[in-house]
Amino acid sequence: MLEITNLFATVADKPILKGLSLTINAGEVHAIMGPNGAGKSTLGYTLGGRPGYEVTGGSATFDGQDLFELEPHERAAAGLFLGFQYPVEIPGVSFVQFLRESLNAQRKTRGQEPLSGGEFLKLAREKAGLLKLDMDMLKRPVNVGFSGGEKKRAEMVQMGILDPKLAVLDETDSGLDIDALRIVGEGINAIMRQPGKAVLLITHYQRLLDYVKPDFVHVLAAGRIVKSGGPELAHELEREGYEAVAA
Image 1: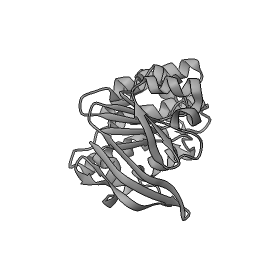
Image 2 (image 1 turned 180 degrees about the horizontal axis):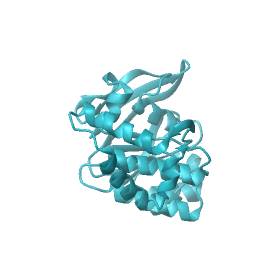
Image 3 (image 1 turned 30 degrees about the horizontal axis):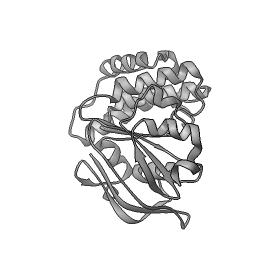
Image 4 (image 1 turned 90 degrees about the vertical axis):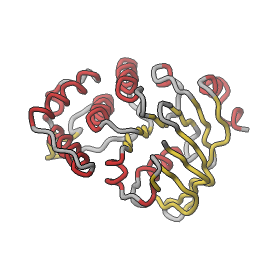
């Protein structure tokens, strides 16, 4: 599904990714862990096409397409979802309308008919229920007045509505309490643990992996993947730290 080969990327002319390679197949969950400044968020933003993140070498293909030849909205329509570490607030924009417009814009790109208001609300209620998020929350402006945990749950509702092939989730566990962590983990499983889908989960800690059990764990340090293994690698990192494991 996703094939990254020898990827180099810079931010403000500073090299961040330095020869990163990674393959993710359909049906797999991969976790990337690493110290601050290693390039984890840069990897997510580069895949998503965030302005200011310049690819200077290497390649990435997504479902057989050259990912870096696609504009950000084309990557999204192709089935790539990027979950942010800090979801932004958009005052004055109804969350439910934002979600409906986002979904129908993607459907249009794929040559599909838009969902009616009733069809969309039925879908939104279903996905909000998975994340135990009150539908009244979605009537507010995007993320305005939401707690950290509510923002993350709302973002997972958005992921469920858009129904991506690949979800790149950047520190989705950041700011979550114990109950919200479980709800978000179960929501990721319900939405993405399906044939033909895959997850790249970026995190500092092992705790979310208790719920979203990865098939593979990778250690990213100094802009490249320095070690890979199974779920046991996350526990090793928790016990011994990045420096000892990645040495």
